Length: 384
Image (cartoon, rainbow, N blue to C red):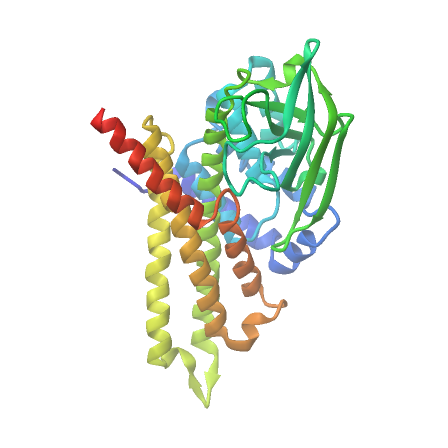
């Protein structure tokens, strides 16, 4: 299989990296991440104009990419720049709309691609511990529509979202795979309360409370009670995006650490000449390449028809990213010494982001267990 990027992807990566370097320097990013909005709507619109959001969607959905490697190229560049704009929500909600939406619902994709609509993925709850099918929020029929009650936790950039994709249980027990339905909820819907707070790694997150939220019949995405498969597809795209973002952040941390080793002197000698540090840096470079290989494998598998192979590749990548991301964060800071702990330096912000990526959409322990479970599932299918 040829893993080299196409000319279009290379051009997109070059344009995006150049834009981030020129318009999204660390000082500017830090101001944006700490702002009341948590991101810049102007920068988000510029990403749309550059075709960055469109690259995350197929031509059938109004974009010009949509493949696993398109997502990887975009999010690696975003990770290198520590970008906080809500592109993760766009790719996840967009995937759900593409997979299960009606023709009328799919018309919303155009506004997402154009940067007009900020979409947010609202699935996690306070006690789910990454379990995809554990949903306590309830949706009950009311006439021709629905009434939703419950709460969602840690929704990235939820305060500024125009549209939420909300999971709710329409039947079954709290852990059942069957009985989960998905709903499109406009941000200004009566009964929906959004409470935001700063995120530890920059930007903002929100908690959603749904108290008697009334929706029309057209808010249901896909078939009632059969949203689990769509959730899996959307989360899979999100996992790939996060893994690619982590590789970009690792590359930035690596570059900063190499530069420090080449310029910092101790007792009149460049510390990069110390053999112990050379060995640690060499080990780190190998680990980062392993992380990149895991992302390449996941990007290649995500568009395949074999569900188990796809999900195992995604969980393998997320597990690898969690382990290696923590290692890169720790080693980079340790090789910088005390200065590596100062917030004025970009490095600790990359370290925080790498650690927090591990906790989004399932940490390394969760994905290791999932990888094993999927392997057993595959073995049973072969035996049958």
